[in-house]
Length: 240
Image 1 (cartoon, rainbow, N blue to C red):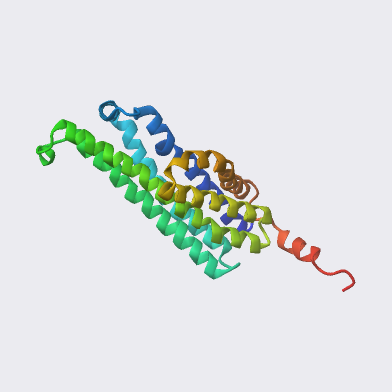
Image 2: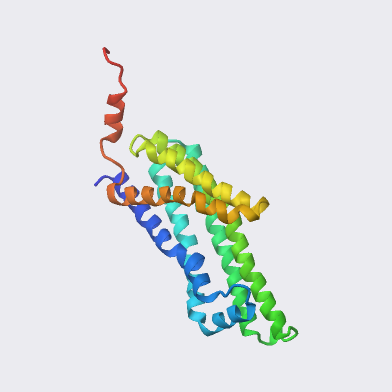
């Protein structure tokens, strides 16, 4: 196995871990603990199942860390294709995306502080602490809406690198552009058209599986040895 192939497979493995861990806080914790339009029940569930909620903090920290290493591994894989695009990908996906993961953990940590109360919060009545806890939970969700913009933007330089690489299928490059656009549209809908957010998310959700397919390609097939050479031969004009 060549160094390039090992790097590609490592990228795919780290990417897979992000895909497996991220839904825990995004999907499982809200479905298990949050009660629609009932702040008291939601806060009570968090207090009763604190370990489950704290695992959400842990998975967000893990996803932020893993995303930094995913971007770094992809940078190593693709930097020779175009350094400027590789640096842009590393900055967006390896620095800004993880930063938002880490920032969002603070919102959940604030929820736990409010759930427990203590001397520092003695000035607040229980109902006030519950309202503040719900505010931080909503801020977590709002931060996800903003983060979708970065989830999309980092895919654009990655897509261009895939298109120019010669050792990864060009189809993934076009697919990643659509995947990135889906995230960007969802984030803009969150910002300016919130009534359309759920509808657009449902329509655009299939495009977001391109990332998953790309990750599986990297993990299983890596960087295709000889693909660059075969591609170059295929475009040589006849009669030369």
